[in-house]
Structure formats: structure tokens, C-alpha cells
Length: 145
Image 1 (tube, helix red, strand yellow):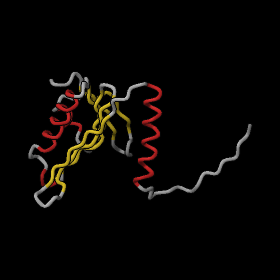
Image 2 (image 1 turned 90 degrees about the horizontal axis):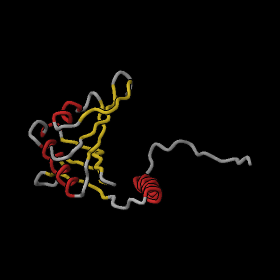
Image 3 (image 1 turned 180 degrees about the vertical axis):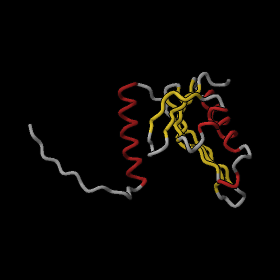
Image 4 (image 1 turned 135 degrees about the vertical axis):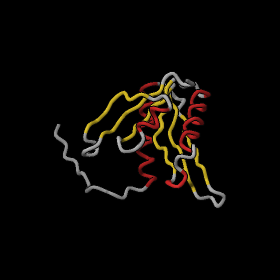
């Protein structure tokens, strides 16, 4: 059969609700295929007294693995231990949730050395992502070391 489908033009301003819709469908499929239903969000936000976010970590745990998707510290709070503290909190929570490993990615111009100092090892690298740089994929296992 030959189906004709219509692909709409690119949308550079997709609403968060529609991004979450896609994520939810992928997560449903993953659970259906693996039978692993223990996925949970893992997030921390550090705020100033007025509520301004100065640092944060977002990721999830699922099937014995913790993935850190975002770690950010505002420029004027860097090198004060916030990143290390957030990663330690995430690792402790991952262990409490039964995870044996943590994974994340970072670019060569971001923080590979920081993560390596926390016991992560680079397990794969994409060259020229973006052009002239690399994207590194890191893993720490076992946790708690």
C-alpha cells in the first residue's frame, strides 16, 4: 500500500504541553516493551530568598539507572560547591531508589572534567557536535564510590 501523508512545516515554538505529550507517549511505549514501571522524576532547585533559581538538576530514575539530563548553576554561584552538592544529592537519591549507575552527557566546552572528578567515565564521544567540539556520554558505576 502506498499512503500519502502530509507533513506540516517545521514548528520552532512547540508548546511545553506538546513536548510533554510526546515524552509521555515514548515513556508509555518503553514501559509496555520492558515491563519496567518504576520511572520517577529526579529534580532539585536551589533558590535565593526571593525565589530566584540559582542552581538546579533535572533527570529521572528508571530500571536501575539514573539519568541526569540537566545540571545548571548560575555563573555567579559557580565554583562554590552547588554542582557537586546537587550531583551528590542525586546520587544518594539514585542509590535509595535502587540504581546501580548514573548516566549523562555533556559537551567538550561544558563540564566533562567536572563529571570525571566525581567518578564518571567517558564511554562514548560524538565528534563535531557541534562543529569543532565533541559531545561526551558519561557513566558512573557502581554508585556510592
